[in-house]
Image (cartoon, rainbow, N blue to C red; front, side, top):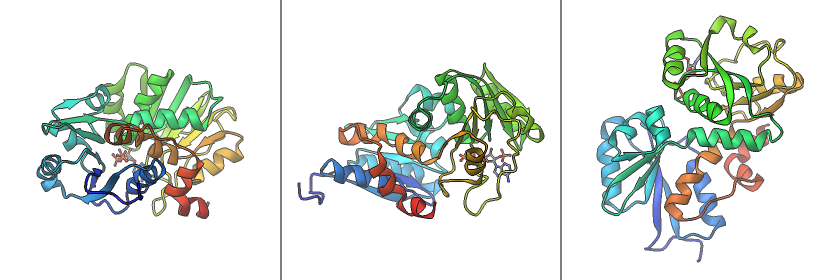
Length: 285
Ligand code: ATR
């Protein structure tokens, strides 16, 4: 292998709109180089109205598959011939695997990615007890499902729009409850885990307003925001004595099942990869 793809290279990519912010090409590109695989992983900017034509065309053109990001995850679900249990449950697919006859299998690896990142980032964490999740969007749903699978319960969702929290709890219960957004700080009493699954705290977004006084210092605090890597929430949690898990791990781990399916290697998540995918974020932190 020269490191450059040949005419026989296996090709995959990520479809999003926009897609320029996606770190998936760096992630998969790093793994392709590291394992000396004759492959290519490309970004595809696909507007919503062209999504199904583009995906079917890329499958017909011989791609091995695609990652799917905002705003296409629900549309991807509707397009697939087969779905795994998580994609069905969440109504969203982020990983498509194209079969030789053009059939499309959809998976959702976001819940898996969050669970793996939490286990790796907080190895001694109890893996049970009550958890508070802030947010009720697509990412929050994946987080809640992961936490139930890991044995956390009850999982309490606090979200600015109560109806979204209730819909998420109804879809993912039992063991999932809602808490009014204004009571989010008091809901931290006795929690073993706090996860921010809103966009608050992301660069360019407002900060999350959440006093941590009621959170036990033994708790673990995780943020799915990874730009910046240390969000104001994680910094405050660290000062409070809590173990913290940043958002980069979820991004890295959610990519593993797709890479394995397309390129035939189960890739490692390690510091080398963190530096390759988020070197600029690490430098900023
Ligand atoms: P994703 O797919 O990344 O989860 P999303 O579905 O747009 O993105 O969800 C964003 C989450 O951040 C939602 O829970 C949203 O709350 P609403 O359901 O009330 O919209 C939350 N969020 C975004 N901006 C917020 C803000 N300024 N204050 C509180 N919550 C906010």
